Length: 471
Image (cartoon, rainbow, N blue to C red):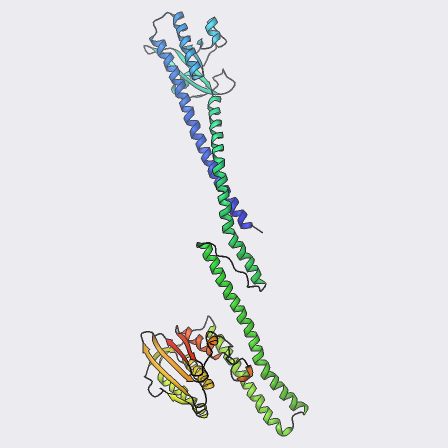
């Protein structure tokens, strides 16, 4: 399978190039052969015409006429490189252009006959290639009738071997092939380089994909061009980064869930075992059962949070939008947390001056988002501190902000604050009621509405969360 695409692509292109050149050569050969044949035919016809015109115009007696005719035929046949004969009206050869006829006024050809019908076909151009019963191999043929006062007295016939035309074609073919070697070599070299450059990123992607299948997300494809292959390599790298982050999130999710659930399960199991084996005294059993009950409720909250998150992230999730008064919803959420607010002596600012704002959104989800933000503010506000609310509408959309005083968020943690399972206090025992999913759920809810959420903080002073919902 190695270099499979490379071989297919390269040899496919090579076949196309060679086939195209072969077809071009065939068409060139046919065209060139036809042109040479026509030229040869015209040349032979011209030779016949010259001799027949001489015979028609000559006033010499028969012997002198034939001698003069032989002289002309001999010169023409030498120039044209052909055999030339004069026949009587019945097709019998009476004059030949060969040397033997010059010496003896007769030769091996004189006396031979060519069918009159065949001579007429040759004169009319119906037959231009053949043996006429005289030659062992086909030759180019031409003839012209010697016609006096409308009566045919004889024929001038000539023929030429096809070797000269074939030799010219062979030489032309050799020149064509020799001239093609250099450009073809350069073309194949360029095709090899181009095919290799196209195939290399694909090969690297294949290797990277195989590595990813084994859990190795470290491989990246070098982007060496700005064309479609370069875009594909860049997209593949982005996909690899996303899969790598997803794998890290999956591992983190499993580790966090395992840790978060192991602690309450250990507590519950320990207390129950203590009650069963009598380690815990009867008068203290209710106390420890109460702790176990709290841990069960905590587990229930964890599972419910994960179910809510799974539902929000599902591709089949659909928002149930409706119009409602966002100010009224915020007031109800704050009133519901009145006991916790009074316990920490928190000062509430800006609540009484919030404007009435009508939102078109999923009411239950926005309730959960605001609740999580308030719950987070109450957890981290300092004793006797403040929580401030702000609500408004502008060109960007509906803006809601909640600010609390306190230790704030370190600058190094700000970029991770919305990640799932992220906690500011790295000691997981510091806050048993938190899984680190609250702010991630808020971000997911706002994102599903097409809005944005941001955070600002200054250490030992304040923390401010703000989300914007599109109108």
